[in-house]
Image (cartoon, rainbow, N blue to C red; front, side, top):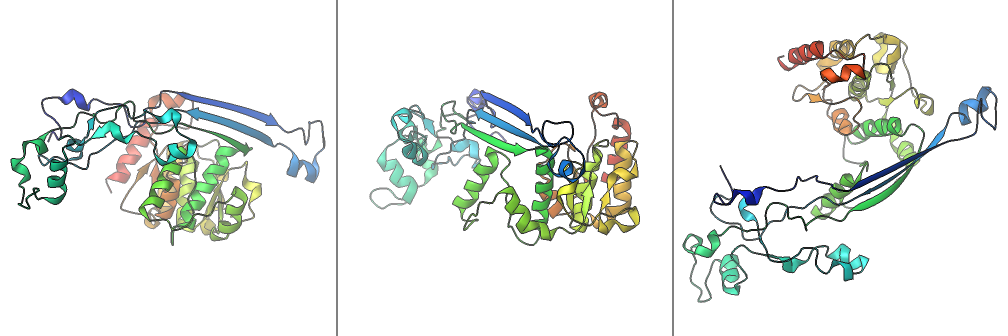
Length: 370
C-alpha cells in the first residue's frame, strides 16, 4: 500500500541512505628495513623471524556525511506508515551551522526551525494533537480535523540534512585485513555468553554504538587497544584454524570451524602470533587445523567438506551467503553457529581460479533444500 501522498509521488524520490558524494582515501605503506635482505639484521634465524617482514600501513579516510531521514511528531492517521510522518521543510537544515562552536554543533547539528509539523505551527492544533482535547476541554476526533490529514513536503532525505562528514587516520601494522578477520571471529566467541566486545571497523559502527548508548542498552564503555583485546578475550578461544590463501572459501570454512569449536581464525601471515593448539589431521578437528593441508582444488570442495563434518553442529535456522573477503558479520556467524556459503559470479573466475559458479549454485541449492 502506498503510504505517502498519492498525488505527489515524486516527493518520495530521494537520495540513497548511504549516498556519499565525496570520498577521499589515501593509503601509504612503509616496509621496515629489518630482516633478511634488508639494511638492518640482514640475516636469518630468530631475529629475522621476529623482526623481519613487517610493514606499516597508514590510511587516511575523508568523506562527507550521509543524508538523514526526518519524521514529524504529527504522523497522519491515514495509513500509519512512516512515510506519512514526514514534516514540512520550511528552511535550510544547515542554516547557522558555520557560526557555531564545535560543542554547539555536536549538541545541535541541524537547524530545528527548518522543520514543522505537516499541519503547520498553529498552537491550537498542537494542543489538540498532543492532548486530544480542544482549548475548551472537549474531546477532539482527529478524523474531523482537515489539518491532521496533510502530508509533509520535506521528502524522505532532504539534501541539506546530511550527518557530519568525518575523517580518520588508521595506523595499522602488517596484515591489517588478516587481523580484522581474527578479531571479528574472536568477537563472536567473546559475546556468546553475554555482550562484552564491540569492534569499531568504520564510522557506521561508531554511529550504532552511540545509538545503543542513547537507548540505554550500554551502561559503560571501556576502550581497548588491539593488544588489550587479545589479552582479555583470547583465553576464550581454544584451538586455532588457519586459512588457505590459495582457496578463498577456506575463510568461510575456518569461520564455521571456529563457531563450532570455540576457535580462533588466523591466516598464515598471523599464525605465529597465537600460541593455541593446532591439530595436524581431520580426525582431531576440536584441536584446531591448518586448512592448507587439505589441498582443496575448488572452493566448492571446501564447502562440501565443511558441511560433511560440521552440518549437524551448525544452526538450522539460517544460512549466510558471504564473500570470503568480507569481514563484517563474522562475529554473528561465529556467535550463533550460522553456516556460511558463497556463490561466485561468472566474472570471478578470472580473479579466482578456485571458483566454479555452476557447482557452487548446485551445492547451495542442495543445502537450502534440506
